[in-house]
Image (cartoon, rainbow, N blue to C red; front, top):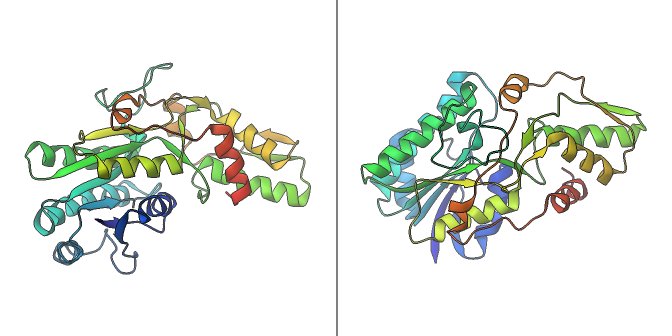
Length: 293
């Protein structure tokens, strides 16, 4: 049976990855209290990897917000540490890192972005993610490690945090329904995004673990772009909310959203692994509301 060392198993992505892998693998899932990848010493991390004897190491940790230093520590330095620990502690294991579509930065409107397209991230988040991916690519090119980065686009599903616009929407809608409010307020919803069900992200991780060979980077998205405004309206309809959705609130990611007005994944490379998204956007949105966001 496959032995997997999974970091971030209690997070939004990690919980779904854990569920997808549990039936066919032996999982070791250290909690953050047991092993915080940001602060753990390399020697202790290497010892944990060696003791787990994994055939795959999956990192679902990271942070959505913070200053540049915090983001670099969470993404770039953690990745450097994991590469060294896997090379020393489990040299035959495959490292699977969850990256982000934020690594691409602005792309031409109407075009699906592919793994080989230019990467010009906007802000510390995308830059830290791209730097981490570049470390993985260099380690692969040097034949130090078997690894893959899954560039996840906009994952949605149950358990989203308020840092996600749809997570905020769910909270606001629940408050509005409970209080019989006539409107909710969000930031601009004009951008186009590629929303992918978090369960499809989990199945992509499963495919990346099981494939005999993987390329260094793979996009994980739905392959379709929709306006955020449309998805928010779907959520409002699922909630039975008929009031107004005003776009007057300040958004924490307003600058990034304004500079990246369009994002859509070319998922043809991921399809070659036998993976494809199975969940429809409408079905995912209904599940988000029923499951509590």
